[in-house]
Length: 333
Image (cartoon, rainbow, N blue to C red; front, side):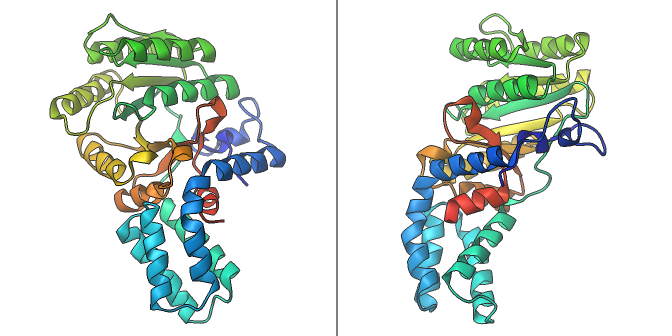
């Protein structure tokens, strides 16, 4: 069943939000099944792109050509050449050893292998620090600001946490206004500066506000930037340094938002951002609009950075915790 919000967050050394009834209640099985059904529908384009080849390969006679077709299908879905080669080789070995009989068994094992690939490091969001500082980064148009607002809403409305949203994207007035609307919806405090203000200054004020108000979480939305622009990447690193001077160990989470529709370019973006800043997790957005949803597996496998959140639509509930097994099943079955 689908992973719930209450299982995404870590609030102290031993207790998850799911075990803290004062903060949240575990979702019902019915709700979880509904979440999976929605994900499966939103992953339809990717699954359809894989479907015909999977059916033909895994249900027929297995020969060199069959395995090659399977590789091509997974690469087309942007699982990535290296990751695909590892998964298909393992499946071929197990099928050759006689441990897998029939198309259903092969497909089930493929789901297991893809899920294993999708798991990279700790995919929870650690909220033990008070305040926990979450830095949002990414290229323009990836849904970064929307993700920041939706995350604040879930933390505030569903988990009862006090949240501060900071608009450090000071060069795009629309982003500031958009984030302010989300802050109102979430009941979160909002920090902004005048247009053109140094983003580091906004980040500094936001940390001061979070400390003074004893907030649980501070989410800092930074300016969208092309990963090829070194000066803007340097500015992002500066924001991190400003935050760290006020709060040692902060930011505690740096979430990079990647647009799934960009395919392998999203992997290249993640590589460059990861070199410039310490990316702790990924948010993969727009999965409902692409046949290349396998990019989640490629990034997790090749960079070792866990996917923590996915976006499968425009609605509030379309931002959700990433579940490797659920994602692999939605991709294949």
